[in-house]
Length: 316
Length: 293
Figure (cartoon, rainbow over the protein chains, first blue to last red):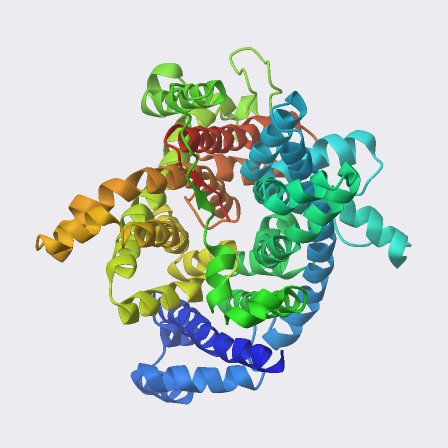
């Protein structure tokens, strides 16, 4: 088990190097001369050359990349252009809020997805299964910004029961109850697409498992349908775990729209605000932190997978 | 990372064809195809459907509610007719959704063919290269690329194409891998077919259905993402009429005239649902199933 985990960790290293190269490229494709834009049009060539060498921009690209990675490894993600503070602190605070929203949305997505998928698989050929399939398909196609805004219009302002934006009330807010009231609408909005995907994948898995020989064997032994379902569900857990890893990553990325619509103070809102201010270090840091989180989530999923399914350990 | 492959590879399965029953495109898919045709016609013939300007408004007619005379869906903050902007907006909204899928479809299929038919070393280097892109939440990567390149529709198209290539390449590689050792491939190799003949004559026609079905469903996603980039301020620049841009523009009147927002918000939903339903139905029709992961 430990050697399995070590191998997985080692396998993540090239991925992380690749990730850092991709992000470095997005920094380098920014059009325009960063030195000229920092110093303004009236700067002298000498001043430009001086700043260029101070920023290390006169070095060849591989050297610049290594310097950048070196800073990255020390937690130095640069300075925010608009806020003039260290990017790392900004991003970590926001990331915590994103994690709260993502975790809530993930729970919702799994509950809805598993329920929908199970109905669609176990009532195959019936109207309720067709309805389940249709809901899943539509739910995958929903743009989060459209859904979020419609929920604000019809639920939040329409009924006045739930807040339209933010994480806590500005006046007299705070505490779990307040957080819960604020998280419902963004959580539902973020959960819809993954719920649809989970439903479709879970449906296929349940159908596959239910057509296996051991189900017939259990039936032949006279086991009740309910207990057979329990056995079947046990066999779907590896697939569920795999889906979980993927969908958590999807949620981490997809929350940009949700957080923007609901002014949820997470990575997504931070990235959105940074777009308008062309604050690229913050955008890049947001992407790096999310990618890192995605890789870590996949490692955790792999580990869990190997814990419950011995075949995994044997295979790799 | 072997499990990553299992984890993200789209599930493809062929259904045993029941002999005797004619394959038919299911009714919802026919409706979806009709909706898509209508949207495309509206996009092409926008100037014939409305006589008003999509970009220049009448300031005296600001923020009219839907149903006002001459303004079926109301007017925006600059007095522009929302129906007109919706119809004209179909053009960039659909194009910036479809072009990235076409671009990524060509490049992704090529990657899949190269990986699927190549020697083990080539196969693993292509697939590991694609794995890197799977480590990013796709939307965030698109935002980072689009933000770095600067706003504008062509940059949004580039950003979306980049994030769509890896999943298409995975489908193409998975399908190619399935054929690699088929009898007809052995026969073609034995009769001295060149690599390109194998790829284009033998493999491509066989993997095309799966790739096309997958790409059809991806168009829905791509429309949502491209409108999303415009919504965030990274796509097409104002005053062009585009659905995502309309939403971000009308959002400021959300608490005073919320009904104005509904049309563009629903337009994106309708387009995206239509492509997904069509993709789903095509999958059944062509006996391929692919899940968007």
